[in-house]
Image (cartoon, rainbow, N blue to C red):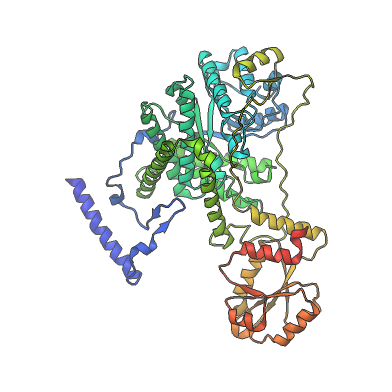
Length: 635
C-alpha cells in the first residue's frame, strides 16, 4: 500500500514537472526533447520511479563471480627479455594482471622461462590473446605442466576462432578444425586440473568496426551461442564452457550507454544459461572490457586521456571482471612509458580514491541506467533469437548481413563527424596545424629466425603436444585441407576520424615536397562582424592541414600562388566585390577558385563564384575538394 502511495505521488510530481517544462517550451510537447540514440532507444529528459515500476532486474546477474576487478594492462614487448623487464617494471608499480598480444617472439620453452621468470603463479594473472599463433597454447600448457605449476596458472590463454575469418574474410585453418583444437584444449586442461580459461570471444572487434552498443551485444552473443553449440557437439559440457570462457567487449565514450551495455551483457548471459538449462546464479560470465580505439585520434593524442578515463570509469561502474585501459598514444603504435604509466594509474585512482571496485553494482538504482539496461538487454535478446532462428551467426556472416549493418552504422557515425554535428577535439575542430605526428606501421614481436628444416604439422592440439615434447618449441601450423574454403566479406575496422587524419598526412607530405598548401582569406567589414566566420573557416581548413593567408581584396593580384580564395564577412560588407575585378583575377589566374562564407547563393550566382561554404556542410568533402584543387591528393 505504501509503495502504491509513493508511485501515486511520483505521478503527480511528474505531471507538475511536465507542465512547467512545456510552459518553458511555449506550448510545445515535451516529446520534442526526446533524443534517439544510435541504438534506436528513446532517451528522455527525466527518469523516475515510474520507469522502474515494472523493471525487475536480478541483482545476482550483475555481481562478479569472484568479486574482484583485475587491471589487465597491456604489456607490449619485442623479445622475451624485453617482456621480462616490462613485467618487472609493471609489478613494482602495483600491477598483477597482464594482458598480452602479438607474442610471436615466444617460440621456445626457454623463451617462456626467460619472459615469465618474475610471475608469481599463485598471485599474478595472465591474459594472453595468442591470435593465429595457436601453437603457443599447447607449448605454454606443456611447459607449465613440466614445471608442476599448471594447476596454479590463472587467467585466459586462448584465441577467438572467428577473428581471422571476421577480419580477413578467410581462415587458413577452418572453423571446424579450430573448434576441435579448442575442445581438445579444454579436455586436456580439465584432465590436468587446470584453471586457465581456454576460450575467448572478442566482441570488441565489432566496436572497432563502428558498432553501436546494441549491435555489439547482438553479434557478440550470437557468436557465443554458435561457439557453445559447436563445443557441446564435441562433448564439452556447458559448465566446462562457462568455466573456460572469457568475453571481451569494447567500451566507448557514451558514458551511461556503455554502463548499460556491460550490465546488459550479464543479463543476456543469464538468459543464455537458462536456455541451455544451467543455473544463472552459479554460472557467471567472465567479462573483460578494453577501451576502444574506434574513437581515438592520432592528432592531439592527449585528448585520448579524457576518453579512456570516462571509458574505464564506465567499465568499473558496470562491474566487469577485467579491464584493459589502452595508453593514450596506442593508435600511434609507439606507446611511451608515460602513456603506459598513466593508463595503469587511471585504474588505481578510480579504485583507491573512489573505491569503485569495493561496491557491488555501483549504478544500481539509477532510474536512467536501470531503464536503458533493460531496454538494451531485451532488444538484444530478441535480435539474438531472430539470428538463431535464421540459422545462427555463421549464416548471417556468409550472407553479409552483419557486415552490412556495421557498415551502415559506421557511415552514420562518420557523417555526424563530417558535418561537425559531433566535434572531435584536435581533428575536425581545434586542430593544431603545426602538430607533427607519425603513426608507425604495426610491429609484431621480433621472431627468431626459424631453421629451414622445421616440419609443418596439422592444426591438432594432440599433435602439437607430441611435437612440443620432442622439439620444445611452438609448432609451425599448416592450413588444413578444406574442399571449399569459406569466404566472407571481411569486417572493416576503421577509426572514426582516420579519413580526416589521412588529409592531414597528405598535406604534410605535400608541404615537405615544397607544394603551396595555403588558402587565401579575404575579410570585409569590422573585426567583430567577420571574426566568427573567420574562426569557423580557419578551423575547417586546419582539419585538412591547410594553412591560411589573410589578405585584402585589393592585394589579391599580388598573390599569384593562391589557387583558392574565400570571402569572409557580412553580406552588406562583401557587396563591395566587383564582378569586373573577379573577371580580371580569373584572367590572371585561370585556375583560381573563389568561395564565399555563409548562405549567399544569390551573390554567388551574380558574381560567378565557385561556391558557398555553409555552417553545416560536409566539411570532409569540402576539404577533399580543396586538396584536389591544391594538388595535395597527387602527392
